[in-house]
Image (tube, rainbow over the protein chains, first blue to last red):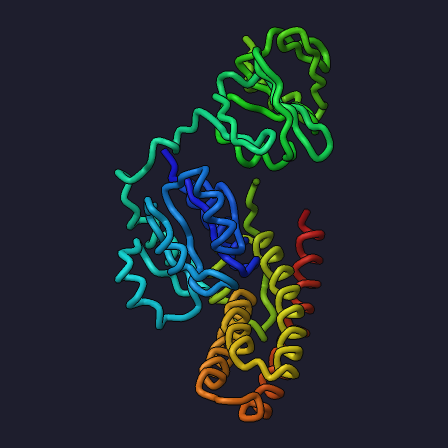
Length: 227
Length: 132
C-alpha cells in the first residue's frame, strides 16, 4: 500500500527533487504538483490524498492558510527554507517539518513518521470524476472501455455512453492509478479487462479496433499474461 | 524510470559531499535540478532588479527567501547562508536605500555562482553523454 500525495511548492527545482525522493523511496505516490495553495485546494476538493508536502511561503495563500481552509486534513509535511516557522508548524500538528534543501536521509526520516493507519480508502482508487458540460461526472474505472485522445480533449468510452472532456492522454496516464489501464498508443489508454482480442498491431474492444504502437506492444503482452 | 548511479566528480567549487547526500549519486536527477535551478535563478535575479527599482522591499525579501534553497540544490550551501542573511537584512531594513550596497554585492556573488553552475551543467551533460 502506498501513500497518495501531492506537492504544493512554488519552487520548481524543489518539487523535482522531492518527487524523485518519493519515487526512490517506493511508498509515496505523487499524484500532482501545484505551485499555489489555490490550485491545490481545487484538486483536493475532488481528490482526497493521504499526504501533502506543503511549502509555507508561496505567492497568494500560504501553506498555513491552506491548512486553515482544509476541512479534512491529510498528513502534512511542511517544506520551507525558514526555520522560524517550526513552532507554528507543530501548533498545526504537522507530521514533520523539512528545512530546504534537505538530504535524502532526512526525507526518509520524515517518511518513517507517517502513520500507516491514516491511509485513506482512496489509495485504492476505483473511480474518477471528469468535467462534462460544466458538471463533474463520476465514472467507475471498471466501466471504462478505453480513452481516446481528440487533440486537447479526450473521449471516455463506456458500454453505455461516451464522455468528452478537456484533458490529455499524457495527463490521464499520470492521474489514473489503476493497474487495469495501459497506454497502448499515443492516442489510446485501454482497460485491459475490456480487451476482446489482439491481432497484429490492433486490439478489439466492444467492436472498436484500437491501434497498438510498436513501443507499447511488449508492455501489453506482459499485462495480458499470454500463456 | 531507471536510475543509474555514475561516479561523477564535482568541481572543487561545489560542495561534493553535500551534493552526494542530496542526490545519492543520481546524476540524472542532479542534471535535472541544476537545469531547473539555473533557470529559476536567472528569472528571480531579473525580478530582483525590477523590485529594487520599484523600491518594493517586501517582495525583495520574499524573492531572496525563495531563491536561497536553489544555491543549496546546486552545491553552494555557504552562499545559500549568505543569501539568507541578506534576506534577514531586508526584513530589518525600512527602505531599499538601506540595502543598496548589500543588494549589489549579493547579486554579484549569485552571478558568479551561476557561471560555476553553468560550467558544471556542461560537465554533467558531457559525462552523461559519454556514459550513455
